[in-house]
Length: 184
Image 1 (cartoon, helix red, strand yellow):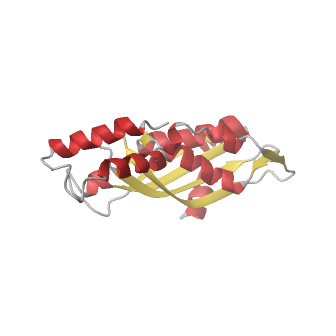
Image 2 (cartoon, helix red, strand yellow):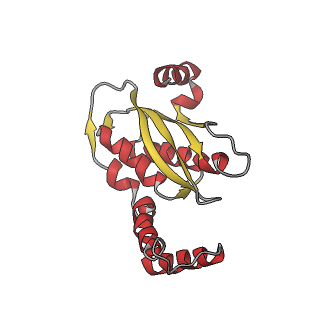
């Protein structure tokens, strides 16, 4: 849960710290706007993937299920700057599947926290393994980080790709390659 009063005070101090006049017209309501924004972009802090992955359905077919190109936005925990991109994932059911929208919701839960991409990728894969108990799961995330674009090295357009494989995707290179071919 976001403490809006603390956020508003922090933003006011930040604005003062960079030399801004917090009472000028364009900035008067900025602390309140940022506090409301934080409720939205950090909404995953109090959300739980259990809610989304707990309802499963019996299936006879245990072939690979892929959900690709799930757009997400997150905040780098190192610089509190956005990174955004697409997540693709697959799992091999062991008799049970989850609704497809629940996979996208799982990405949202973990992306709406101060985060690093490497951890985000692993959290999604681990949640799939824990809640769905599939034979295997794999997650690929491709993202652009504004901390690389706007500051520091200043390399717009550069992308970071992370892949986490669990279960059969770790041990079966052919299966892993099939996933990679299908999501590219």
